[in-house]
Image 1 (cartoon, rainbow, N blue to C red):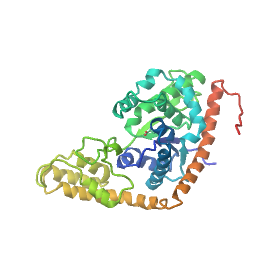
Image 2: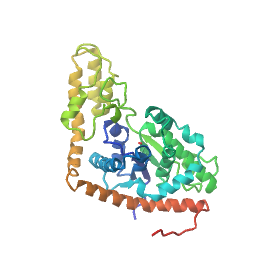
Image 3: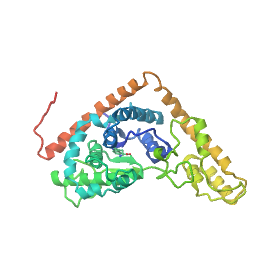
Image 4: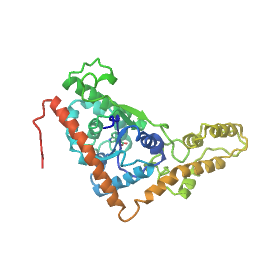
Length: 355
Ligand code: TRP
């Protein structure tokens, strides 16, 4: 048996296709971690349910589509484990216990949750269950006892909550001292490591526009991983900098250069573009958009090809088979975690066989 690789877990809520903001914010990193870590990629369909319980058929299709995006992006289901949240009962059970280890204020004051309630028009309408997704996310993570969680920066408050739960559990039920440094909880006898967020290379990619908004589906300013090369070119043309001509000294920190930094890998070329742009040395926005389109299309072309394999009449069935196989593997570890957690809590009367 090879030595066990450290585990990594992250997830996406199935709400629509993945875009370049997801790529540079987290997905790119997940793809590159697969070789060195035992990776679990979770489909957070229960989270989708907290706001779209009246559109469950859409959630199902979005779940299938996001797996297509993952596979297209380079997630390898042989190497990594794709997990369907609603078919891992240990997650739902752990959520109940963890809800007691956080205060009401911890949850309701979570900055990402507060922001969502404000911006998604949920303020007076959200269900009793909606805020539970944040506790559920602690369970998503800790069910797999991972060391790292690659996420975008908007997820940091959730990861902080998860770390709080892990410390508290270890202190209450595994006799770990509250003075233990985070990296030593397991050594000190804790069940849960205190996992760390790994943020992406680019925290906030702007959408195609004037640079004031971040890339997002709802703002209609996103370039999707599944876009055609024509779409990519057309959308890049929507970037506006207010610059008049190729000889006007430009600001090489503007929205266009956020894209340059994100998608032109050759650092010498980036430096040259910046220099000429700043001096107004015959370097137009149009030319830069052209170079960006080439680079982005080079990135997306292999994704389009991999995606095409699943855009067949039997494609969805193939995806469902991958989800099933991954979830089966995932349940082995999540059930083990649940068993160990309940044992530590004196809640275990097992072994149990439910069917
Ligand atoms: N809340 C995350 C998002 O909307 C998705 C998610 C669910 C997640 N469970 C997770 C991310 C566990 C990291 C770890 O993007």
